[in-house]
Image (tube, rainbow, N blue to C red; front, side, top):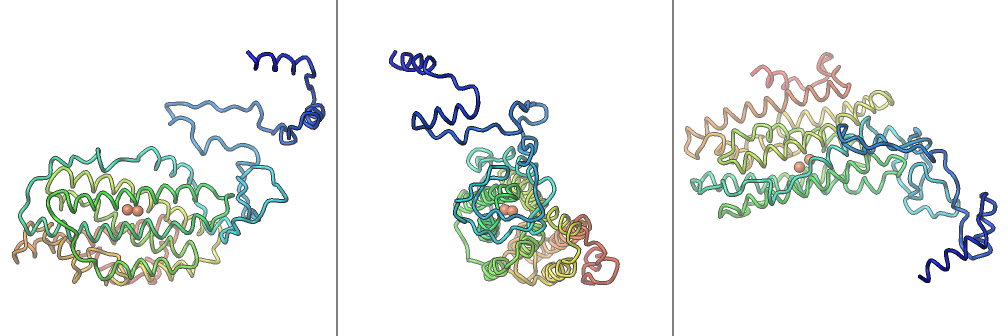
Length: 379
Ligand SMILES: [Fe+2]
Ligand SMILES: [Fe+2]
């Protein structure tokens, strides 16, 4: 009742009609009302349409909030489109303030897709379908899952620092990277669960993953990092996940690879779309990008960089051969190696396709690309 009385009194005292009167009312009563201004989007409401996916991030930005300049001086954490406060401290001091350094078309759409396709390793994997496996198969599964747990740690660890380095003017790629880190946390947990789910245990840390993680992390430029992570590392793993049916022994493992592949394809798409934007907007960086691709191709053909579990001579490759061939006897492992060759071929073909989409396919026609790629494709 007391509230009603006070409200009635206020109405009787003064009803402000203009912005100036409102400011005066605030001054008289000790309220700070100078923020209470009209923005150009007032009255321009947006309908959420269920058949188009609801209220989508890429459909809400209006007026200056929708504008992304090629360069930003926003160092203060001001949301894109918000009114500048000159006294704001430079809390961010972001190193990425050039749009082409981080941007991609459809970044908000990729983020929305990530949000819609979240899954849970607790309830979306039919763990009850895992039954006792022959000892060598279980140990190979545990070795591969140990390797993948390490790989997923790198994939979640490395993008993190770039979020805080990017000005909020380019919030879409920032938010996508945040969603990627959530995805990678889930991948880390699902492979860890697989390790223990059937009475196994974590096997040895692989020698090369920490090294390759360090190499990706040493990048001082976002695009360099993205090429090594999204195009190379995640591209290689995606091709393997897509062939997960071949190395699965139950519906749980099939579901793990299928769901992880769906996430990885989004992360790889981010890298491809970013490279494509860069190719279209900053041709001066083309030669530099080709040098990253030179490095990636060495990883594809000889396993340099340590990101590829299908590279011969590694623990994860032997584990793959046992899983693909169905046993650790010489005949089964030889059969597994043959199937692993098909995995490597798929990795190369999918890599070539991604580079073409990104706009750097000229390297496959002008002799720049590693010659051994062709041998893989034709093998
Ligand atoms: Fe992952
Ligand atoms: Fe990933």
